[in-house]
Image 1 (cartoon, rainbow, N blue to C red):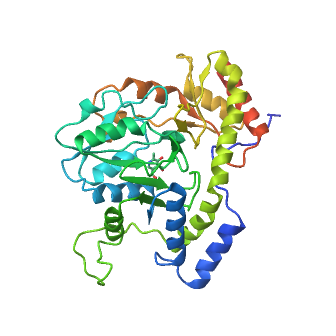
Image 2: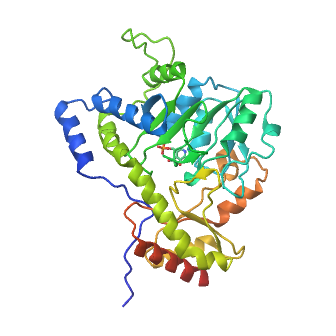
Image 3: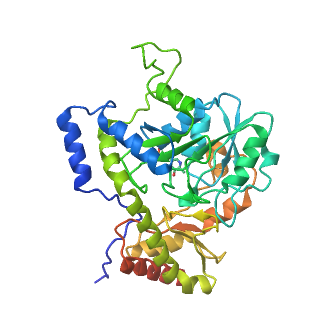
Length: 372
Ligand SMILES: Cc1ncc(COP(=O)(O)O)c(C=O)c1O
């Protein structure tokens, strides 16, 4: 008889009675489209959590990025500096504007966009930088801000994976021009599908609200000065979000607790030089959206390791393919740090329901899988 292992998924949403009660209330009220009290409440509460003045809820994280870029004036022919090691939506949002993503390599210590040589990537057409707080670790925002200020660039933070992460004591999303979040089902908090732009700039906030709503003049029905989008969040999504945002501090603490468990359990493998652990720079508060490791043995096949872990009932994800290696963005140029991280990186189960014993199961599965 084969041994049957319980299945440990990489993530699972934590939804409870509070989310249910809010959704029931939205349904009973009849306000199920994008007008409704929960949208207003969720925008206010999430922006406050980030320490931002304005929150603009959107249909998902990708539309949040696109909305922020268009509102910051990014258009055809412009260049935007983007890390290559990220989810494809970061670069796609640039392309939706008709602009060109210019790919930047990763920092080996944080896995986020490197700031070394960033200046030299700026041309007369560069208009913005999108730092991505990858897997929950903030980018080195001071170094990025210096480059942005020197060249007059907008900074659109992609914080899709980093709710609550901090850079030198400040929450991500408020460190640039606009911060963009995702509330997809696998994120630290969820609305099913959903996103949010946060900003301290009232003019930009108004522009984003207008563009989100077909470009309609908020004071004049069906009057459109510009071509906008339908990027609104529904009151049903926001009903879930309004309940989730109250739990966000707890979700973040749990992610950090899971990371602590992984650090302990993985210590022998790290000491033996088999894996590199998830980073946390001295200036960072990583929220470890997905606790991740990089296999240290250059001969270990990450995909074979994943397959062997799966046989033991442990799910995982590979790191993103660097975008410059994907067909729509192939540039025929090497960005070696990202390529090497991507080929050996592994996201481990990080769902909020994990217990210490589950983390031990995952690490035992990884250790066994590394033995072949
Ligand atoms: C870094 C990053 N940016 C953008 C997105 C896009 O968010 P969404 O799936 O909500 O459109 C995601 C995740 O899905 C992401 O991980």
